[in-house]
Image (cartoon, rainbow, N blue to C red; front, side):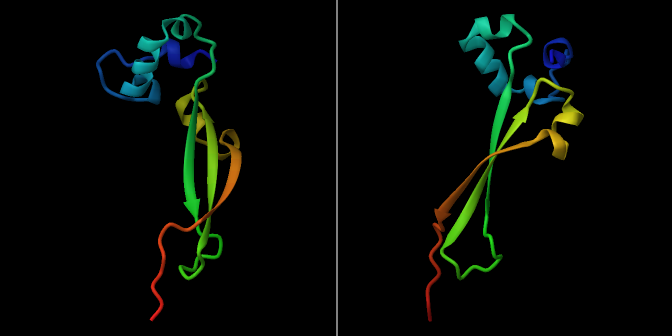
Length: 99
């Protein structure tokens, strides 16, 4: 669970998310969080899906995923490690004009 703390990029090249600007910003704002390498770093990702694949419907579904960045980067993106957190139904923002 401490892979991100022990294997950071030394040459400034982003090889995993913890090398990026967002994670450095979090560690600068909350330095106590960085002190314990076993703190869990999660990411939320959203993806909008039209459930029937047709544009004439006025609703869509948003899938919210949670990804754990404490494990190895090539394992964290595998299907069995990505957690479906929420399914949010919503109205489609793009209205289709009828002829």
